[in-house]
Amino acid sequence: MDLRRALDIVAQPWTYFGVSDAQLCVDVQAYTDDDLGVREVPALDGDATVRPLDVLLRLAVATKPQYQTDLYEVHRHWSLLRYLGLFDADSDGQLCLSSAGRRIVANQRRVTSEEMGVGFAVYRAQEWMAARWPGATATGVIDIDVALSSGVIRAGAVTSSVVQRGRRRPDYLLIAESPGSEDRYHYAVVECKGTKDWRYGLDQMASACVQLRGVAVGSRQPPGLAVGTVLADDWVCCRALELSPGRLRHHVPGTYPVELSEPFEDTAGVHIERETFARTVHVDMDEEAPMSAENLVRAGTQASWASLADFAGNDYAFQRWAPPVFRTNLDRDVRARPQRVERQTRGGLDVVGVRNLITLPGGELEVVFGLAAEVDEALADRDADRVIEAQRRVAGQRAQEHDVGRREPRDDVTAVSDDGAVLMLIPR
Image (cartoon, rainbow, N blue to C red; front, top):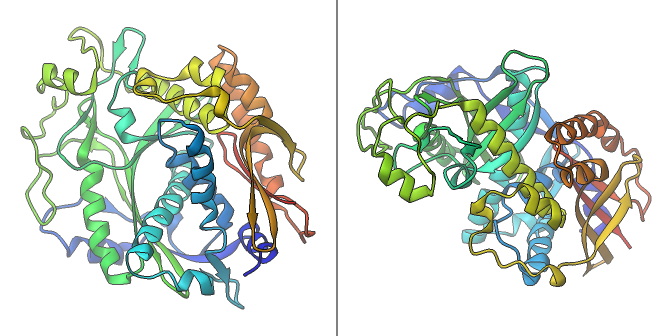
């Protein structure tokens, strides 16, 4: 597959299978004696379409580590480009693996499936949140380890009780905002799985559903989504099951036990081993402070803004919003970072970010990790409302970038997420 064909494939929407029905609940439940407490999600059942570049953008944002070095700038571009020629489409418009992708076997295939599982899961989870809370805008994807660490669960003098209730936990915390609604902020957890084997995927889903219960916010279990991506040679499938919010329940040991320090009670997470927890995640626990999920969301949103700023090389904005955990052991040589550039997409969106020029078979490719310019500018300000408004406007413009029509050989290929993150691939 040459460069032009690869760019054409990732730029256009292709069909893949979405499975989330009552039979999937039964099949997954059969893998454990524990009551998983999951249900189907009609919005995620049935054939769906996706541009592979939108999946790659979610993968790049979600898996960006909280450290930065000059060498990593090159590494993170190359790790994304390794999947540029992974996909193809059959004569019916069904997403599948390219001939090169099918030659990936053994352990490398496992790694590929797992990483694509992250990209697809975040993409599906954002669709799920849009269906669950109509009108809400996804504003952040946060690694759950960050959400359990310093600065992310604390806003001002108030600390929200976000605790891990066992060794196993979900992968990410997602945050959405609903302007004008009674509950302005919404949060949920997501567990991502990926495999090439249809049957083993059910085993993974059972494990994922248990992991969703590994985090408590206050005394409640947050909504959760388990997504299992099957990356077969001839087709792609995303299974999904939803864990409804509710009071935390005592866990009944089964095939996938969650090890608890004590049973789940109505007050779980408020008084459990407070001193030990404070030492573990460096949080100042205040017995008198109210446990507010909204404060978690606000602080978590700021952490997601710091990640966005770092993604696009905006070091000033990163310092403005970064919680302490982002600064711990941070190897940040600003002088070694690539120079920031300004670009404009074919849809007319102004973009600011960092770039690398990489030589590939078929020509050179410029890769830009960036932000919509108005979001980038707003992040450098101290006004959170301005950031939210800028992200809302970008989300409204995002559809323009999907109307690609026919590409000319030198046209850019662009993906834009609702929070303003942009991935541009520009052949030179």
